[in-house]
Image (tube, rainbow, N blue to C red; front, side):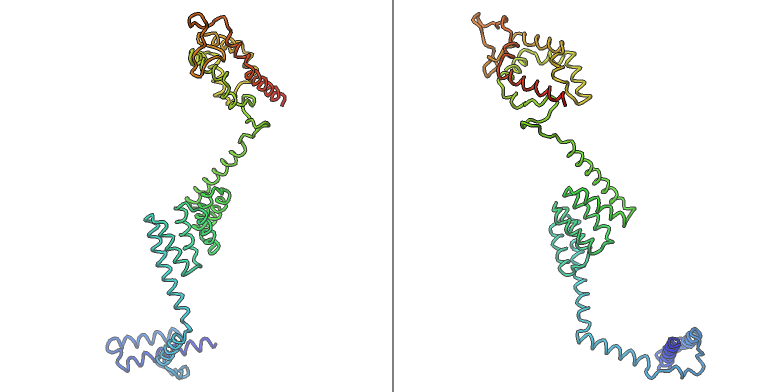
Length: 361
């Protein structure tokens, strides 16, 4: 076969080279004897007899001639620029690697902007290396610039789809942007490449938890009701209006001044109602609450305590005085006066109307 023929010619050229080395005293003494043994082993290895006639396999040029011609040819090609572009690429790659190494050092030190600058210089030298983009994405994330981090990480995995760390950094960037589904997708692709990567699995679980929480928050958000009133367990009453109503505020001040708040909180019925609210998270129906005899009796007692008055208090909460030297007028019913307040009566009507509408739903 032609290949065997060429192989034997090469072997004979090697044997001739070893003969000349001994003849020219390049190798002599004990080493020369070793060469003879080596020649026998080489020839036998390729099916030749070193002491036989090998002239059929000799070639016109010696190994030295062939090597010298090749060396001159390579030098000529290099000088002519044939290998110039390759050498230039290697030089750029070496410089880019040096920039990346310096960038890594700055990243470890916490000099994130400097690291970004160095990674950028590396990318300007070689813009096809996925690691340079991945490392710059990590530095951007450390600065909180998750948008730039996502763009770099995306570029990294496009250049090298097998770059698991690129998917990890892409997931981290999307997590920082609160794009939890995109983060899940990126972490999942990374795990396909590295199924045993604990950090990727932990990050994936965190992203799934965040997505669930954000979805749940949107679904349970309160929806505004007609009339710009916010839905509430108390029938849609406008509490801003209540707090701005003088009658309500006067009643609150009187209850505080008279000790009514303490009495209210110690009452078993109120305590039971508060406990139910704590357990269920729901307030009682106001119409049922107002018809409760214990609550009604409590309200009457609070209203009749000394210092409890109708809406005639001044801004400081001081009681209006009768003409008997400053005593409170006990003959007046302050709760009735409070309920006769036209603004409070109108609010109560609106409130009860809202309660009835809610029961019909």
